[in-house]
Length: 159
Image 1 (cartoon, helix red, strand yellow):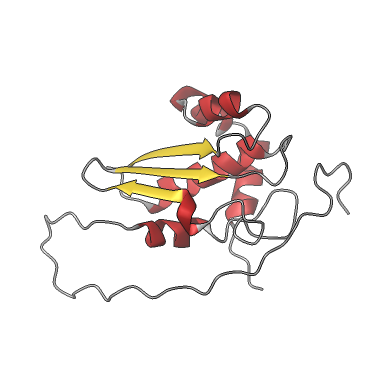
Image 2: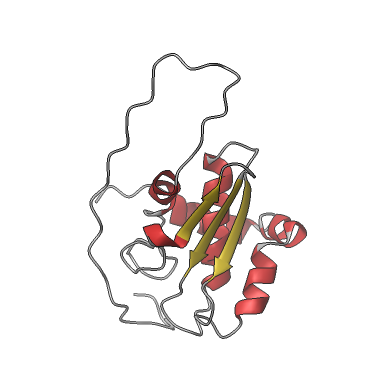
């Protein structure tokens, strides 16, 4: 049992059914840049586990399909997440998990922007600044305890 949870009894929602995308052709021009859509991004992040609870970010409605924006012409992805409570102490960890998952999953040409939904967190500005500062993210990923926590949240679940 975890002691000191900020939100001891979060509302848990049903997972949405995975939508199928059209099959990609077998032969692709090796120099073609294939666009990515919001659903593909959401599929990468939906199963990230919450750092405090045994539920996915999708089940807690921290992320939804609507929380993903993509601009393929400028190679930019933005994910706006909503913590379960206004004083969520794990908001920066959740944002770091989202960033790491997308950096590991997307082609390097994409710039990833992670944001807390406006008005959903008491220190929204500070969290957004921390999550989108390259030096702060790099420093966080040098902390072995934090990296272990991120890896645990990103580990696949077999339930």
